[in-house]
Amino acid sequence: MSDVETLPRAAPARPELPPPMGLLAELTHRCSLRCPYCSNPLELDRRSSELSTAEWKRLIDEAAVLGVLHIYFSGGEPMLRRDIAELVAHAHDAGLYTNMITSGVGFQPAVLDAVAEAGLDHIQLSVQAVDAQTCDRVAGYDGALQRKHAVAVDIARLGLRLTVNAVVHRENVDQINAFVQLAEDWGAARIEIAHVQYYGWGLVNRARLMPTRQQVEAAMADVEEARAHTAGRLVIDCVLPDYYARYPKACMGGWGARLMNVTPSGRVLPCHAAETIPGLVFDNVRDVSLSEIWYQSASFNAFRGTDWMKEPCRSCARKELDFGGCRCQAMALAGDASATDPACSLSPLHQEVVALAETDAASGRSDFIYRGYQGV
Ligand code: SF4
Ligand code: FES
Image (cartoon, rainbow, N blue to C red; front, top):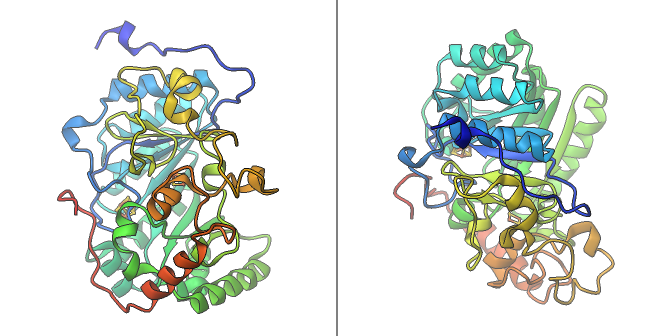
């Protein structure tokens, strides 16, 4: 690739629209684990289609010029990329705050040393459960928890700032206190307890993952109690399923408001599940500059602001607070991405969704459909 091709490209900014705060760089869909709620799409990008080192570097430069502050290296498992330390160093030198989201599995300890040496600012280590039997079963990988423990020890040795990512669902939502204890044992400053999101793999497995209302209420009480007794030591962020909630979550902080998500092969999305919305066309960084995509693309502008909203969102006092919920969840549950998210109690579909959640939670199913390249 020539120097000209690797220069960052820019497009004119729209003064009324701030630049994105963060860029989620999904470096690869390759991963040793097979979690049945993976946020990657059902059709995974192959290694042969991944952006090259030079293409990622140019993208990082474009992000810095655009005004992005944080880069989140993600996947799949980002540490499987042979150039991972080179990309971290490049982002660090471009002035970005660098964050690695890892499963902890599938790479040698030396790779962790290399990314720390390259200037990594922060690491997020996922854990599927606090006991090996559940963790390994959910991850679809024998020895996963043991490996994660070893990585946590290395993270502490390297002095990297750590957040523990606990994805919760029916099989582990009763482990809140134990997750918090594990985060403290691993020396984390923060734990993110996030319920499975029901798109893609999570939607396929919803009956196997949906907790009961009683479980969710108990988990919320556990989180409050844990916050009280870890105050000053550990930050606990928590997102529980909104199927049982009164109002939906403000997904992504609003569509096209804060984040850009780049897939391994260079498609740029407003959120990781945006490709589940038919009719949207996503530009590729191989063809269009990041700046142009942020400011001018049809996909990023599709649900920006509030003009696109229908009733009841259009005249709702909360429309600037939760932005009508999640567009991908509206698509999945209402068949219309511009509908009010049916998780909202004001949606005409809300009672149906609650009934769906209760039926799924009572199903007793545990036959996970694991993430894999075969799709479903
Ligand atoms: Fe890999 Fe599981 Fe994380 Fe998906 S959720 S990236 S499969 S560890
Ligand atoms: Fe796409 Fe919520 S996941 S808008």
